[in-house]
Image (cartoon, rainbow, N blue to C red; front, side, top):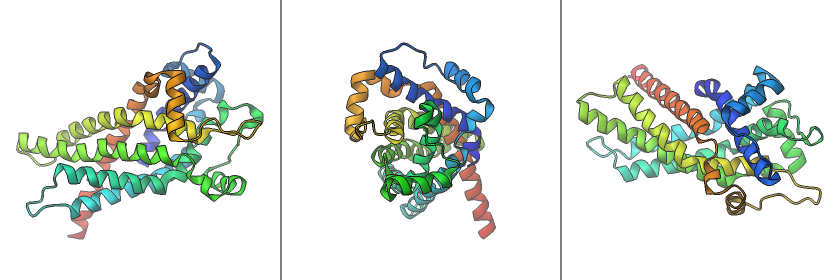
Length: 283
């Protein structure tokens, strides 16, 4: 939650870049998806508050999703330790993937509400959902679309979470272990910073295509005939590549990196600090 409060404006710009790139590709119009252009558009239209649209949903997402995946990963990691205290690379990967899978299922409703609130002002006035807050979003989605709609876009959310966790949590612990051996130290601040930076880059590069598809699926609305623009994960990938090109899957990568990497670094560092603090308290 601390990391989200810091990174929320960057996340808003990232989502708007993805939406704008999709709209430009569909309309055939030319336009800039530069983060500076998009940032200026948000500021001019909605002021500073516009960068924090959906913050309550973002915080709810961290409570459900990140708390779950980090807790599950740490629990599985501790159980996978061998007698000498080490964990194999394969077991680290399995722990990370399992944590990402379960955490994403728990956090999808809050993630759905967040994407919709961030995308709302890009819609025509008559098509906007105008959710008041995350609780209003949950109740209206259930009332208007059914309970299972809270898990719309769940496929790319799960895949993104599995990929992101695999590229963040396992490499973070692996990098720390290797750096500890090289320096002869034990989890110093510099070691944690370097390891979290490596994990941040890997997780952002590997997960962006799935994040892009997730945004499109979660924000979509049926047309006048009641048809949705995408039938699912594979269809969205296919249509996105056809209209935007393969590189379009990585549109806004610099912005996404500056959203994921610092978020990962802050999250991992605070997690380590709180874990060590809890161990001292319970001794």
